Image (tube, rainbow, N blue to C red):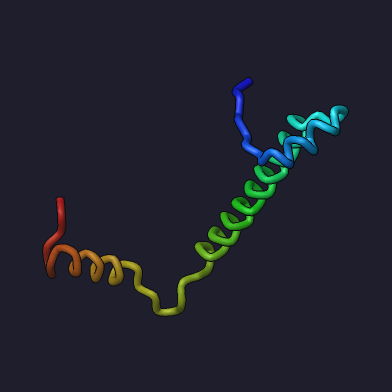
Length: 83
């Protein structure tokens, strides 16, 4: 198992040492797991929202071909395309 080092101030370390029965490594692993799980859930929610936005129907009259042509013309000049 990899080793992770954590720095605490002297007062906090003294207080931790007084509570010998507590497994500080286990507590920290649990807290780290909570944060990782929370962030994973948040990332999934953001991904779902992005997919919902992408799934929306295009407005009526939307011409994707014309839009692509406009973008390409703005990059490479009218009537030219990159190969």
